[in-house]
Length: 386
Image 1 (cartoon, helix red, strand yellow):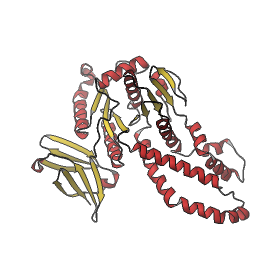
Image 2 (cartoon, rainbow, N blue to C red):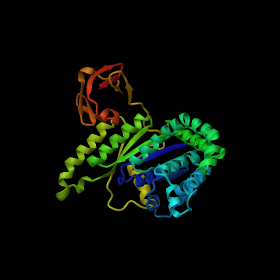
Image 3 (cartoon, helix red, strand yellow):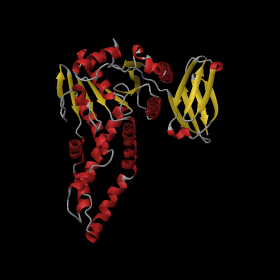
Image 4 (cartoon, rainbow, N blue to C red):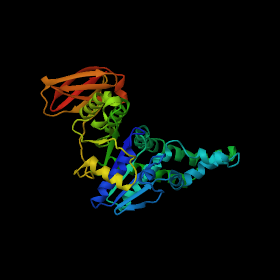
């Protein structure tokens, strides 16, 4: 089973692109489920039908659903949720505010992502297309599994042991309910599920992420940052989609200045993501909704390319800490180092090879650092920061 995640800055049209992709793959005979994990669901609006937490058939081979985070929350929390609720109401009464407080920020989105693992395990579909939340939220969720893993491995055993020893005393003297074994058991099950999801998302043969952008500078900058962060956490980004490109015939009169601006923006994207497939979609003269239009758009966007395949898979860069700072290593085979030029501006570095220029948004840990040196050998460019 293939899993393809679509993400991008809010408002770039990733839901429409994800839906169009699902339509194209389904027409090729694969059984496809397109799923929205964004809390502000718009997938149903794209197909112009009402969707729920259960897959609905759109047409032959194509199904769609919008994950209900409230239902997923209730089923995943189990005894953990009940225990936290006891803590919150042990000296007061249960109210609607209590229910709201039990929905922790970011946790709903995480539970929505856990649905990916359930669908993958069911083996019911050939391809799962996921319309993710905007990039900022997606980044937080993809990093959460690492944080949760550390908490469970380092602190959880201490907490469990401490609850067994001190629990009866605290419960008797302070009248605070202490967690029982079933609460800890549910916590371990939840941890196991998150860990399995994390391993699945890192499986580059199965999962790839596609970033949707437009030609606006602020959106391109976000796309570059997203790519750097995803790459840093070893997730595979296998293509970039430039959406809402103004057609040439529309770039007259009032929009004439956009012609040069848009051309430079597209060049910047192609140079920055050099080697990674870049797909372009022009702004349509009508709203992108309903199956027929989404299906036509999928054909326009991808042409004859088999888009269910992993389109790109390569470790482009890595970061290593050394005694003086950091070493950023970039894979750049077959380059004559005499042709290499390197510069840094703000949170980006630019690498030029003759007439080709590549920009790379630096991960946050390097943005406050300065380049102190660089070396090219064995097909790798090493840049030193301090």
